[in-house]
Length: 127
Image 1: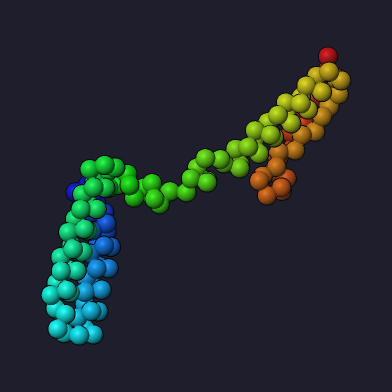
Image 2 (image 1 turned 45 degrees about the vertical axis):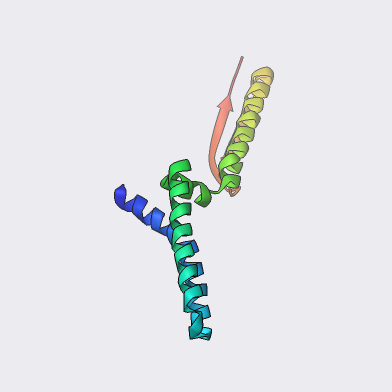
């Protein structure tokens, strides 16, 4: 677990430090007399990377933070297949109730989510 948390910590650390170190290098590459500004930007980048990584680690936890940002809440909140299966169950119960009331044989088709016929059930209820 230590190795995974280390990777997550470095992942958070590298974004601000990498951006500011790149800007510092770019400023230094344009004019080598701006070395002081480049060093200051690099130090600010490293310190901000440490600050953000530690803030996330203490507040949320590293693995919890990355699991939240990589999750898909639109799929987790509502599952379309569950809604369809609930509707199919209600329809099946309605057919069974109608068969009970009428005393006749009813054919019920269970279908997959693609609409193909999966199985055929014969419900024969005689009173």
